[in-house]
Length: 174
Image (cartoon, rainbow, N blue to C red; front, side):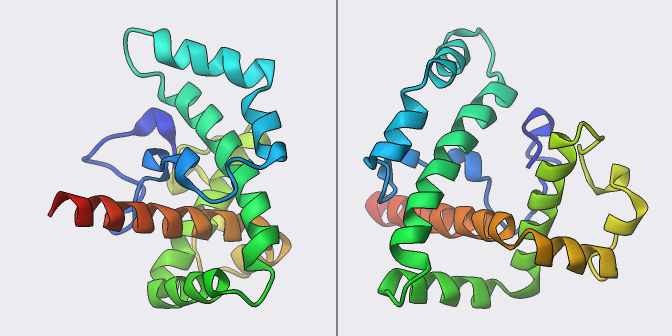
């Protein structure tokens, strides 16, 4: 969840996937006009060009453009499939249910981290979170989750898509 702290020795989760490896262009909805408006914007293109041309990976820049594109695709996908009675919604709900509390904890953590970062607060990991957010079972965390359901759903969606893409790659490799 923190692109500047990427390390195989200290992932934000040892069970769940790094959503920065998602192929955004492979997600249904990427071709939507609203998504294309985001990825065609001058800011997006400039940041993407910078990320592609630096000597070493600029994880912050990569995360910035990747998350902007993923959020735009999520908004389209959510409206098209996840807010309706569709096979995609059924599969998403099954994934979330199978992931259980572990997946929920990660999604809430990622949403919290994103919110804290947007507020300019330390957010590199739970040790620097405000005290009321350090324990998943604290009522403040439940309140945050309830007030930010769509953000939490976004991070659940990212795990679902990452798992699907990993499975597809694994199947092609065998």
